[in-house]
Image 1 (tube, rainbow, N blue to C red):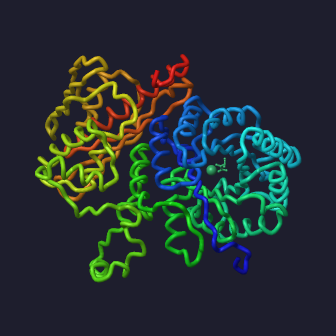
Image 2 (cartoon, helix red, strand yellow):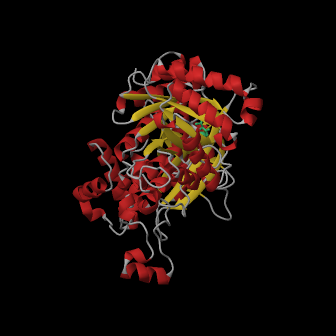
Length: 532
Ligand code: KIV
Ligand code: ZN
């Protein structure tokens, strides 16, 4: 124990909520297979708890929690509920095959939430919370209680609630700063106050769940740890509603790099941080900003001559983290067409990609095309190729076989596309537009008649140089397949040395995803599963 009573030999439990709070980022909607892929990567990375979803919120969420509970055997699998029986029943059912199930229930503790959202009184809210914990304990031995908006609550009331829910059987008490309002000093003091004023707190683990509205989510989480919290709730790349959640990579690497201050460990294999960051970005369509700590493209780039010189003489002059320790691949290793199948397979394995023969062959054929155009292919090109060819966790209904565009300052941009349909039939069509991308999208729309609105389009060079592979990420909005009245966003990405081709691929990706989601929703309505 140190002078403030914190056990310095402790380990911090990493609770990942990428698939629940993270998925609430606008447009981050993931299908069940995509969620399972992320859950597998989280398990391999050594995350302790995976919050897999909010089972009552939709049939898709229920199914995702159920499949993750069945397949991921080395993590606690957690499902979120509100403090009522129907939600808890749904979570218990979705989690029933989990090796280590946890129900995460709770409700608001701030007066703002009690008065305006819950329209009740402090006393009744406390009673409801206690009843919810007792009910959840009938199904599972591990119940986490969230005191929503604790960051803005009266601490005295919060202490009472926590004492009561721990007596009712909560094993973890979660202290959310739901609106991202607190500062690190304040939040740390709140956690310290809980340790000092909740008499039975030694029977539960204190968890911290922060939000980034004022850019302090990571700092607040760490302040929580310094003051005795032993579970951190984080998301990969910090994705989440509004400004997001604390990012897993920042919290874990701060704990590791400044162990002298925090004096705690996690079970995370930090070399898996970069690959999972890429996977989540790919699948959610949410790019990682270049200057993002730990996983941004510039996180380990040294452009100033003085810094370059320093790093060449001794890496630690300007680097506090070895990029290899977070799995950033060595981009200096390049391949060419001459590297052959063997060389490519070896490099892909080094980068952590496990491909079956069919997937490898697809990647190899694309690799040859890129190598032919660019002569050399580096790690970033390979990542883009794998994302395009392999990381597609839905059925591809329409396949783009050919795209051709004519444009220029004195001509009308015109595009022709050839598309293979679900039964192998070939469609050919053409249209013109305000620019080449518009023309291509209109031509595709003439074949695939899925009404949607393009709401975001971005293009990025994957590597340096005029011959770089361009990566296009788009978002389209369409009628939500389950509730016809709301709209849902689908992202798509495509990479090619020709950015018009990359744009066409990205659009086809998003459209196929939309079609697959509609098919899945129709199957759910008819009681079928995807594998039926
Ligand atoms: O931010 C929050 O309060 C939450 C709870 C539901 C845990 O996400
Ligand atoms: Zn939250």
